[in-house]
Amino acid sequence: MAPQQVLYNGKITTLYSKKPEVSALSVTDGVISAIGSDDEILAAADQHTEKIDLQGRRVIPGLNDSHLHVIRAGLFYNLELRWDGVPSLSQALAQLKEQADNTPPPQWVRVIGGWNEFQFVEGRMPTLDEINKAAPHTPVFVLHLYDSALLNQAALRQLGFDRDTPNPPGGLIARDSRGNPTGLLIAEPSALILYSTIANAPKLSFEDQLNSTRFYLRELNRFGITSVSDAGGGGQNYPEDYAVVKNLNDNGQLTVRIAYSLFAQKPGQELNDYSRWLGMTAPGDGDHLLRVNGAGENLVWSAADFENFLQPRPDLRPVMEQELEAVVSKLAEARWPWRIHATYDESIGRFLDIFERVHRQHPINDLRWFIDHAETVSERNLERIQALGGGIATQHRMAYQGEYYIRRYGRESARRKPPLRQMLKMGLPVGAGTDGTRVASYHPWTCLWWMVTSKTVGGTVLHEEADRLTREEALRLYTHGSAWFSHEDHCKGTLEPGRFADLAVLSDDYFRIDPDEIRGLESLLTMVGGKVVYGTGDFARLSPPLPPVSPDWSPVARFGGYDSRSPVPPAHHHTPIMAADGRVWETGCGCGV
Image (cartoon, rainbow, N blue to C red):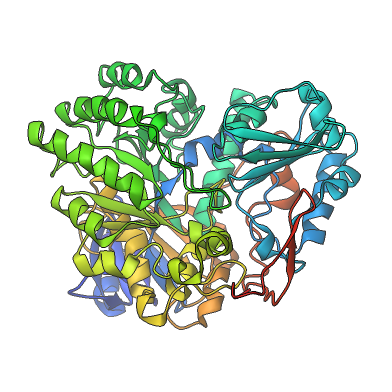
């Protein structure tokens, strides 16, 4: 039988050991049916076969983010002004002013993470005066990673914050000499103050959430993302907040494969959450586009070691052991895999003590449980993870927080954080991702660039050359490596016969361009299961249409998403960095920026 589609005249990186590069492949029923030379593959086509000329372009397996908060991000994408990739503070503030002028009450202007001051040519944060000048009347909330947020005076009035407003647990409201809130919120170290504050702003209607999610998925497709492991999130309730992606899947409008984990929502009620969910669903429920993956990344709130390197490492309370062991035992007994947020080796060691105890009662070595993040994990704890059959989902958070880490722990400590080379040497399952959209950008090419160059977005080099990954190693982690974490490494992550036809045709040759140009890559044509989900340039005619952005005042309609125009990081040498509260600290004293 002739294939339904043939893609030919390309440079196709398959990551398949028997044929690592070919020029053509064929697709039947959403699955790759053959790979080889143009002559071989075209010979099997007939008059009904769709033929796509790749025009000599580099093709890669579809990218798979092993840690992205995609479901939550989709619900809010059309509300958010993204500073991801914006090259200058002046441009960012101009966007803020324009959006404030065009945002109707009672809506807010929200800049929700994915950026830092080191990406700006000015090398500094915006000041509260600048934000108030840009938006004197419309409430503004600017989230800086998960360490702080800036609110203008209109937002403070809307929230009712005044000199009598108490500091919430784990957070600080900065105040002037008279005790009035300035607009700076600081996580010390809990991020609760940040996401509980923005939760007070208006949400989109269900119809607009559908539109918002479609546009966010198209943004991911724009960069070649075809799969995601969703890590849940605070305020992301099951099953209510999953209705949008379920609706899109039911209507054939889901353009990214999503394997999602269920995230405990209420401190002290985590075991009740999981007991209830175990009776409602199970890992694997769903289909190849939308399915349950397991539990996490938050299993119990007492185990949350927040990744704010501007604050000292949090020391988890003794109650953590009891609470986490109860949940993990329940999950292991029910054969549910889990993922758990763990930034610091000290936390990981305590978690592994629990996992080892549970393993003796309910073996976990075949569940594919895993650690998320693991920036400071030790070799000893890597060995313990491996002995229990676990893996590590790693992200490019150090690309956004490397300067902060160096400031607190020193340059030498920042080397090999996280120790990717050691993980690969040991043969551990490792997946790549971003932890977008708040503590870092969802932009996959910044992550691939970071793994290859070890640079932060501010240009600081973190690792010696021997500890950096090759381009093929980095790509493999972002494709087949990530598929392990959703139990799908048998069906995706490589372009070989029998695997899903998930692929991206790139704007330039990933393997040949200058390393710093990796950040500027995009997809010209993205396919999920042989279905074109994004096309531009010479492939634009193949791209499925989207409805207009709604609401029509959305920042997405005006500015789009990630700004790819300035992929090379600015060089900051001996540049003072000004914090939002006016404090200044130097970056030229051994920090490499």
